[in-house]
Length: 294
Ligand code: NDP
Image (tube, rainbow, N blue to C red; front, side, top):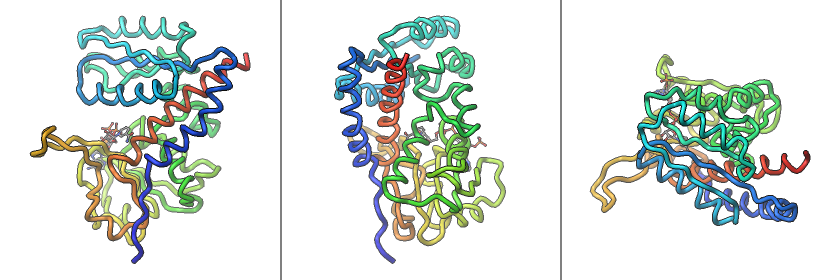
């Protein structure tokens, strides 16, 4: 069998950033600096790292970003009031509320408060509805990044069996809708698995492309795929180890087990993660561009 192709989100995201530079310059010529407000509630260390990684990229590209940190005892009303202020603050074209929120808050109420035109994460029901109707506006960053990765490496989805494991509103479900749309990439026959799925192995073994987004390290091995399946590993999981940091980051997929069987695979880290950040930047630039045509 030929060696598996590595689908590098690091490489593809760099080419995305390169393609965005002229668009950023055009905006700046029109006195617009694309801006992102990142809202972080509580002190979850992983969320801190995610927000930092995202905003670092905005700074590197000369974009405007501000991270607003709120304590974990912030109420839902206080957070919604803040979002309402950000909705009318012209410095920000995009608003990101880092999930998960404290348990006392209702995610849906908070996401509903974001102006859909600034919803660069694509989680607002208006944007999810447009996506479902086949006329997407802001596409959630992780599924969008996966589509871009597949496109870049000329991985055909038309007529293929795609199996997605995990049905969250931020990854699995929008991914399943996008890949089933009558467009390219898309036109796939999609199966969405979750914890109630029966005989999951039989289903995943039928996949031409398998996308795992469960957050369960090592849950996909060579027993779950057929020869030459393309494997997209969305998982970002902290696993304790003896290293200096005390943990390492692994995906859902047992990489060493599947590498001999797959035709192409995303590494973790360096696969889907960098694409998610690149798509957040791209969506924020799109949001800024939409203010030009007013
Ligand atoms: P959620 O916990 O919201 O959803 C997990 C999904 O997986 C649920 O639908 C759940 O099913 C399903 N699931 C869990 N265990 C199993 C199992 N054994 N068999 C089948 N299905 C299962 O997670 P997220 O979607 O937010 O994130 C998933 C992973 O992706 C995490 O590791 C997260 O860190 C990572 N992630 C990575 C990103 C990136 O940029 N690379 C971006 C976002 C997330 P059910 O609905 O029945 O409970």
